[in-house]
Image (tube, chains in turn orange, red):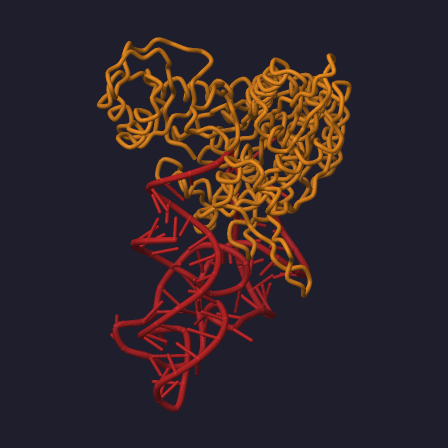
Length: 479
RNA sequence: CGGGGUGUGGCGAAGUUUGGUAUCGCGCUUGGUUCGGGACCAAGAGGCCUCGGGUUCAAGUCCCGACACUCCGACCA
């Protein structure tokens, strides 16, 4: 009987089939439900709580930097979308259109926003007149729609939640600094809070955002060695400003165009967390965003005093600022242990009559299943310390994965060889010619992920054309 | 959008070759016994077999079509 149950609830081992493992997790940990529209999912409370925690952290970061939240409409008239040529070309293939309102056919069809540059631009053109109006540091939390061909929960859905920042500045220097500062915020969010090491860098022209002058990115490596673009920040120059007429009188009373940025992170980060830290038992969640940081499991809870003590312990931890779940359901302790491991709760406390007698409880870490006996009066300090070490440990594990699966290559053959058996990141020199970049993609299957800020010299010449090469590029298979 | 796979109570499957009363396990409900790694016993409830058309006395099963999920490719946060 117990065996059958295990079979039913089993998560496909990640080494056997990583994609199936991912799908099993999002369903079994109650993160999503499929809706009747292809590519659109229900984000269930457990996953949404993670998103809310990400929002709180990042929203706090940008508010501290002077950014303000706004809400833009979700519809963009076709004529507005078409004002910037590169932009519309980039997005046209994947926009959803509204052609009818009620029973009336619309004069002009409306696109459901795939991103809101055009709306921000139109608005900025209305409200900006003087250098005194600048900068405008706007952000919105919303959902956007992109009619993707193939979809996967969190990683690529037709509607997804994100944050899009859109700022305009009086000078190029200030706008460029904003672009890079935000990239640093993204890197901090990922590394410090989500425990995901990232590579910061610039996208090649081929990979940059439609309409951008420069696109910057943070690239993370998933457990299977594939890359996940986890955040992106663009410098637009004055391209949009000119297309939309965002002008202001500068200090010398000359009419000038603004310099613009935009940047975003999305619920894709949740997919990143799953694929960075998860294991065959299920999720492993970074403490900073875990909806439950400590699960309290009473053992022999019908015995007098057990539930009372468990409730007291849970409350003590809540008072100390932790997110705590006391599970007093009728499930067996073993079931609860497995359940909270599957859900990735960083710490579990087991508490039974034997412990209570001795004034202790058992604390178990999700990452290594290490058990330790902790006196009640030590609990808040030990929990804080263990959460801290937990975060460091899962960061280090992800960092080791990144380091051990990043290789240098000087020739196409070496690049191909690097992908033996599994996906990896490959560092190689590049001459800067887009044709060579394309050749590498064709020959190895890897697009350029980014030109890292931290450059290394891994060779002297481009592996494709043999010409001198000075830029080191990270290539990899992407989600 | 191209190529595969799948669709049967909430979940996982059998049944489809050879058409003939809808099966099993888990979960759920109720009662009882349990409780330190997914407990056990007993009694119950729950199904237009994805949807739409055909063929047939009769369709989960055969034929045609749609849709969804999923994997592998081309594109993206």
